[in-house]
Every structure is written in structure tokens, then in C-alpha cells.
Length: 84
Image (tube, rainbow, N blue to C red; front, side, top):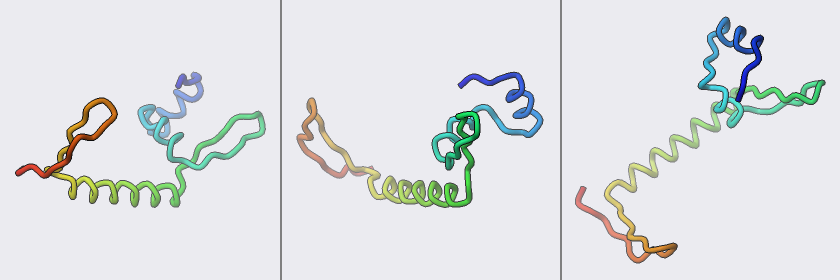
């Protein structure tokens, strides 16, 4: 993503980090603007949805600790639990 001079100045003034722009675009709600531009806004519902998703992923990762799969090509040959 490239920034106009205006966008660069405003992001610096408002403490909005350029490294967050892709995340805002990815998780935010989109709104059509008059000149065919699109605004992405991270709304409360977006924040809640993403936090819930990541909480579930953390729980899943916790349950998978020590689980292994053996893969050859596109086939899973076996799966097992390790000791740690």
C-alpha cells in the first residue's frame, strides 16, 4: 500500500501506524465513499469477532500441543501424540 503525502501526514499526526493499515483493511467493515474510494473502519463488532476467533484458535492450539502428523505429498500417513 502506498500513501499519499496527505495520508502520511495525517497518520503521523493521529498516531495511526502504517504497519496497521493492512490489518484494518483485512478485519474492518468497508464503506463506499463518493469518488469510488472505500473506507475501512474497525468497528466494535469487528473487534469482538476477531478477538473471539483468536481466543478459539488459542484454545485449539493448546489442545494440539504435542500432536504430530506425518505427511508425504498430499497424504497424511499417520498421526500421534508426542511426549512433549
